[in-house]
Amino acid sequence: MGSLRDDAHKLADEITGLRHSIHREPEIGLDLPKTQQKVLAALDGLPLEVSRGQSLSSVTAVLRGARPGKTVLLRGDMDALPVTERSGVSYTSEVPGVMHACGHDTHVAMLAGAARLLAARQADLAGNVIFMFQPGEEGCGGAPLMIEEGVLDAAGDRPAAAFALHVASEELPGGTFSSRGGPVLAASDALEVTVHGRGGHGSQPFRAADPVPAICEIVTALQTMVTRRFDVFDPVVITVGSLHAGTAKNVIPDDAKFSGTVRTLSAANRAVVREASVELVRKIAEAHGLSADAEYVQGYPVTVNTPAQVAVAEQVIAATLGADRYVPQSNPDPGSEDFSYVLEQVPGAFISLGACPQGVDPDGAPANHSAEAVFDDAVLPDGAAVYAALALQTLA
Ligand SMILES: [Zn+2]
Ligand SMILES: [Zn+2]
Image (cartoon, rainbow, N blue to C red):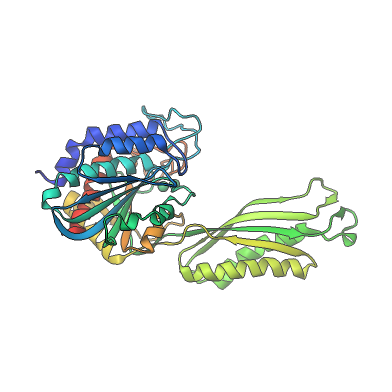
């Protein structure tokens, strides 16, 4: 048995082949039958207890070590995005309008590689590894569905730690890992508002009840609320991305509507913004003699890393690949992730992996979700080695 890194690099062709195959046939949402088949084929013949999801096309695989011990969970998400690929890679998507623009194809391939590396070490292993191949990360809540179906208890006892890698096509140099303790990604909620007025002639607003000036005031008041009511060091973002009213310049409409996204980095702020935003909307409408329906829709919670598992990750990456391959992440990212649901129940860490191709400036590279995003194959063996090393270190 060589070093993990050497063994992972011997699997490079296999890991890359799986990645390309998934990249060519991307699937969206909770039902990814082709991707699931590819995962099952990649795991075939390994000494794993493999099960499939009921309400989604997930794959859960359990590796039991030769001796009893703790359990560790490794997660790789599997779903693509409704994007028409313009990356120019040779293994480009063959499905019109669908692309692995968030790099989840690399996660599947790295996790399958880790399963092979760890299975080869089964005789030396004390404890269990749960491999969580998860559909529906992009807004469908695949992780909470897998938790409902028992992924956290798949090996019998609760994992002592859970880890997820996520590739980034920009910002981080290729091959560099990064994470931080505490909040690492935001909660993502929605605010849906309809202001009800009474339509009329544009020349005689005093005979109508105009919802348009009121809704404009509400949108700007939400921005003022963010800066006046929330600690600047515990950020809140509200972005109104959709706003609609009326049909003609001289007709006062009955209603006006908007919807926005709300990002918070603490459960405390999330609870306050939920109450405060709805109250602000209703009371501004009331102050103008109108009424408003305001619905606050909760999405993914804040992703909170456990400092101890981030320290394990830093140590493991340094030992496996070299100390220069890890950089501490200074700030959380206002994106969101449903791995947050796993970390609500199990200590662990969400770790970014720079996958910007060599020779491309990470600061100018197309971002995740871009039609032009490129995730470099070169990082795949090291990612598989790190997944495996995180499990070995947790079970050591
Ligand atoms: Zn994404
Ligand atoms: Zn993603």
